[in-house]
Length: 330
Image 1 (cartoon, rainbow, N blue to C red):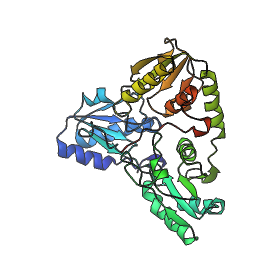
Image 2: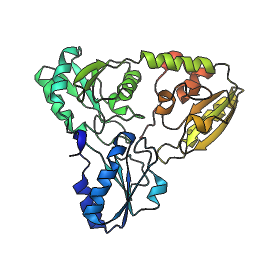
Image 3: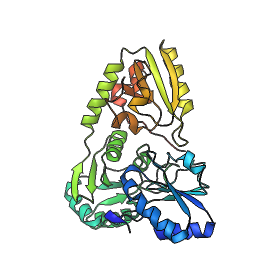
């Protein structure tokens, strides 16, 4: 086990490398685990004799494989995420999910008095999916009915939610949701996608809080309001294999034209406020990582809309039907 109670499976990685005969190995980490990369690389090099190259690029999910590094190595170990169904690079890429060993029983018991519904749907990230059955047993011993949704084809495990896919939260009918984890974005997304209460049980802080989408909704409403007079739109497409939605971008451009607007498609790998600074448009529409517009709100040179928010701007969708953007599987 690694520090902070996460399993980086270094012994397993060493075994896989030895069996493969690889000479050069790549490692890719999401931002929260990058500081562990030198120590893990040293262990792997010591245990196998291979040359390890660490990706220094940002990593936002299983959708964001470092394809440039992949071309330079015999195999790539991608940490912190489960594979996606459509990952064409999976043949050379090995996903190390970095499961948490945090005990969830105490925080789930702590959540029980706050759960007003009877039928509770459990959701979490890949770090805690192996603890959902334990959580279910605790709920059921206290008279609750527990369900775990399967999600669509992009979801590797029942109950797993991604920052761009909340289908496991829609997979079962329930009264209320219990999210096990430390983040805010995933439970907020499920709350907006379902219109139901989502209680957050944070096993690291051992605290209970309720997902409150009101602040995010105010921010998104402000972005929409600033875009109502826009005439020229920049539609952002990511070149990352797991994020590229060119057909959606083209559909949005066609929609803009039907409404007498002008729209241009920009494709890029890393989407940042600085990257977009030189493009003079009235508003952007994001088809890259759905979190981008929400997490970076207010930092772009023009309002950044999601596809659903663009529909509201054009009158194709009601304000009441505002939801987070998702990348949906089959």
